[in-house]
Image (cartoon, rainbow, N blue to C red; front, side, top):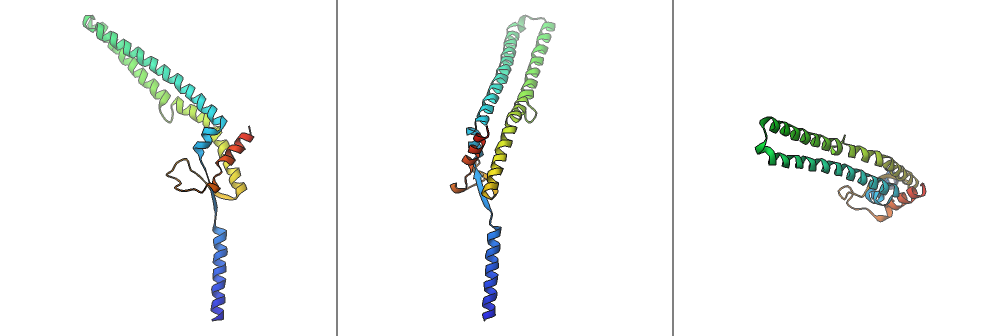
Length: 175
C-alpha cells in the first residue's frame, strides 16, 4: 500500500511539473488600433488617401469626357454621314476601352498601382510593428501573440495580456 501511495505521488508530481513546463504564455494586440494610432501609419494612410484621390479624379475626368463624347454623338447621329458615324463610334469605343484599362491598371489587385502604393507605404511600417511585437513578446516570455482586431480570431482576451500599448510606446520611442 505504501509503495502504491508513493508511486501515485511520484506520478502526480511528475505530471504537475510537466504541465507547468508545457504551459505557454500568450498575449494579444489590437493591430488595427496600433495602425490607427502610430504616427507613421497615420501619415502613410494620409499619403495613400491623397494618391487614391488623385487617381480617382483622373478616372472621373476620363468618364466625363466619354459621357460628353457619347452625348455629342447622340445629338449629331441623325445628321452624320455613315463614315463619320462609324469613326465617332470607334472613337467612343476606344475611349471606353481605354477607361476600363486605366481603371484596371490603377485599381486592380494585386497588380494595380493603388495596391502597389499601399504595399510600398505600409510594408516597412508593418515590419516595424511586428519587430516591436516580437521584442515585447520575448521580454514578457510569451510564446504566442494574437491579433484581437478581428473578433473571429479571438473570442475572449484578458486585458492583462494586452501588449498593444507597449508596442505603441516602443514604436513611438524609436522615432
